[in-house]
Image 1: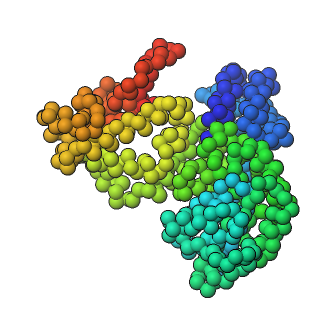
Image 2: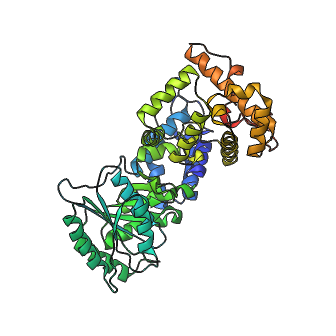
Image 3: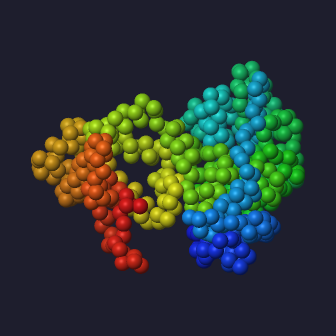
Length: 474
């Protein structure tokens, strides 16, 4: 997400010169480039004008201290304004203490409303809430079945009716009674969408809202519709009254204009974002983290949260000990690869790391392909070989058998084994207080599969005539 916008912001500050102060003369071109970037990203024109004006007013006259160039100072100002237009801080769900919290989901057809309902249910379940999903979309074929599938996948109960001609408000009323009788403390109501905003849709939403008396009315918005997302949010709020938005499919939109427009245009906060197809890919929206991603500075806090969610403390301590003692084996390597998969796509995780936004998708794809090759090779190893990689070094016949079993060449297995042994040696030196030379690092290309295993694709020459770096070199 935001790939294009990040690149354009970086281009905007390249021309700033090393003056002691930021002046109108040295930021005019940068502001023009930022303006073009925001408009191309589908940010609303009124938001762009206000943003540029605010940045200009706050940047001009800013002192540039020693060690900081004007471009860095300008980015600092831009970062603060990005956070400001997106709402300054995370806006949490309004949750009741002593009675069920009722959340009403609204939106146009195709925005991902039913999926978002399931994702939000899982999010609340992980906070130890007893969640009831309510299937009140009686129009779309298979909408009820879709919600039931999501519910069963993550052990969330779904309330629905078998009675024909039931009205959504009647289903809602029955669901609330059922929830109270069975001690549910979170109720999420999935309602019908329409292909466009119409009076029938709005009046039905109003009726459901009157029955549900919800604590939250969340509008699910497809980020791919660009600046229309902000106008849609505003329109829904004026006609129905919403408390916030869930922005879906953000991973599929490299422009990101919807995220920058919704709060400013509608006055309502983005509460969650959907950044993947997996149900667990719903994240609370943090303006400061999103601004950091937009400016290509990564999002370490979200990365840490993902890791904490998947990694048990005891497992982390055991792995740390193995790394320090250089006793980790191929079984441990597979565990780490599978952990990464549970956390999300490799590309998505890498771009949360500061300074890694420049890795292109082709290189990430090569890295993912290489990891799959290694996992295939490890699957062809015996238990002894996985636990004691050194036995492979002594017996070429074993390496040939692994190559045959995984469908690769013996030289590929040799390369992975050599990289793995180098990495263990490097970790052992580090744990003993040594600092091996750069040539001794495992491949600065050397984690198996992370640049340590060469791609079959020909190398491309870069402008500086250096060879293309391996995945781990970055």
